[in-house]
Image 1 (spheres, rainbow, N blue to C red):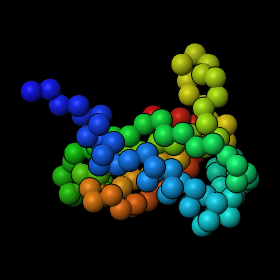
Image 2 (cartoon, one colour):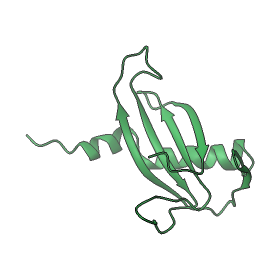
Image 3 (cartoon, rainbow, N blue to C red):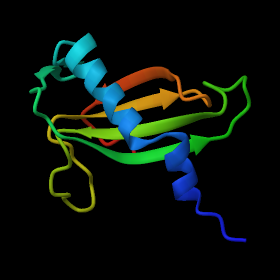
Length: 114
């Protein structure tokens, strides 16, 4: 029996849910401004968001968030990679989800978190 693990992962954590959470956090909660280590960055409302990585992480409940999902999103989409290094137009977002799909926490950075 062959299992399509990518489809299973997509059914557990759909891109549409991730993208809706990203837009809600950035345009709603943050008012379109991200406070990055390099300083504040204004994110236009028409910005493209691209899910570039999703993972199911299995670990003991005593480690980090326990078993969970992680999604990495390119804010503004991906720019043309240089030497295989991914660059987002504005920043990357890493969203951590519980096994039931609830958003646990977020992180924003300019460097590739993948």
